[in-house]
Length: 267
Image 1 (cartoon, rainbow, N blue to C red):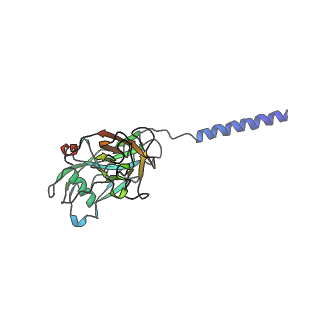
Image 2: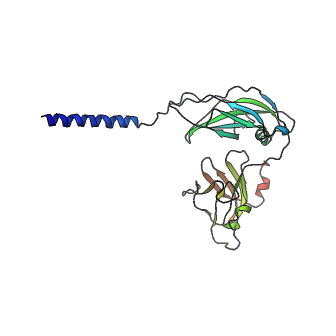
Image 3: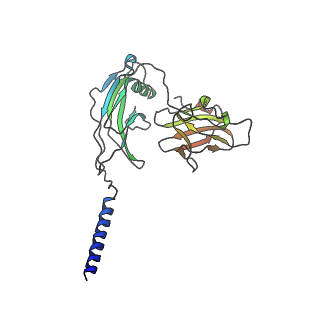
């Protein structure tokens, strides 16, 4: 009888501990209740000066969003010249609740948005809060009047070394991110005159040197990318417009006509 009681006692304790362990392993319950909000700016009008290019123009800060549990989203500070944010520029990313932006970066963004040297431009700044690729919320915006100075705009580049140019990464053609938002595009002549019937293979890199920056290749499925992935392959050879989105790790290749890029909107 005592053996039976002991057996059931140990069995009951085991079941209790198992259930307790299962409860402890539960994932946080997502219950979004509030978006992050940008704090009011100390100065809503900035006149930028080239001599202060590397100094801080403005430090943006904000409240944490409420997700129903302790979360650490990726915050992206965006700026645009319209309240709709139809095509915003990404100023920078952080996991903190503040972000300093220097004069040079803000000046370049203002010029890309259509600003002219010495003339004030009304801009709008908001925060993108990304918990996962499917959980993204935005703050309200604050207005910021910016008077830029003249400068040469240097867009972020993505290098495209491949079989069509002998895998010479130092001299690889580039795609540009016109809105500094990890979205790149450009036109490339993907032709290998020595092997005209072979597929063209290539990769995408953030630096013109192997094993220095990030290197992207095929993600396996058509139109997808992966860090350190295999060669991307395209056939037939020809002139293509290439769009790359490193936020979603996707790309598109569209046949084009040489000279077509000259008819697009000047960016």
